[in-house]
Image (cartoon, rainbow, N blue to C red):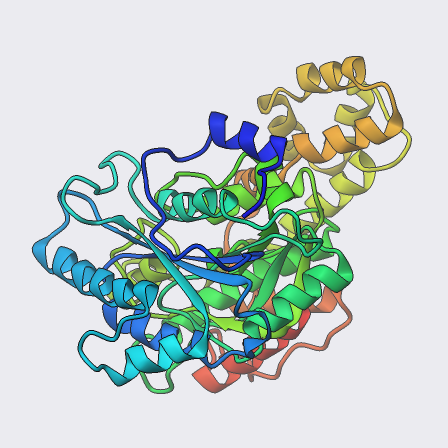
Length: 443
């Protein structure tokens, strides 16, 4: 560890997590921190440790894997007991002591990878009831990593986000580090594919959910949105500068990944790393109020029709609006609102409700250059506002659409022929997989 840059000290003083300890063995010069929040994940942690230890060891000495073991004081006893098993395992790895002659511990220690843990699970250290969850756990690990980086090294200082139930490839660590350093990236998302177990009860559910995720990003890509990237927590990587500039990870119990990447994108490009893949779990889960686990559970409970997507016409409206709004020549408020009304009356109503008139006036008043104005455009019509517009159009003009009809229409926008499904509204799982494989290429 070297002297911490002033901007990092300023961030930690203002936003940083305090009164928590990073348990690790100082000594190595760390450039990369893989932060993994975990609650009741003992078995998955063991699997992930093996996968991490089997990565290319080239950057092991400069990489620290940080587990944030967490629960609430109100968590059930089974969760707390599982977390204590994880802490016991991690203590051995940090101390490099195989206390029970465990072959797994022996293998992990021998790999040379560095480990650390934060105990937010034991009595008196639990996460607060109000905002204890994935977002805060990620933030804790990422904030604490800032204090131990080797800032004297010219290599990028990277913060990896990963989840305990993920599968990673053997080039995961090397690929990310080399992409960031050779391409001079600031932030990126890693290619992902949800784990799909054939003939399992979750197979159809996760295919449906991943199609939903990829269709939305494909729609944003068609519209030429600045926010056309996936926001999945276990795929996010950023350097310390972009992390600090964005004000750090959000504390939300869910969707922390969406809001964090949106903040990052307002300052830096969010690129994509395609030569390694993260495989998020497709299990049912109680851990977050929404997201993959919740969507899989909802699908299996059959409480609503899951085979619905946003109407493709909504993305045409978005595309036309962005073509006008993001042009180099800037209009006044009346001109923008006139153009919006010409595109779609509900787009006009949406802009009025979002206080566009007042906000655009302030942007023009406070921006001195064209570059500043464009930056403010991206900040104003951000990822969240984009999603709100799509939802507004869903509710006012274009109701949800059959999933596969919507996919066919969207694919036509990219001059791609629809997949043959013989007019079946919800085709068999094999054909659904063909759609998914195509969207995995496109997004």
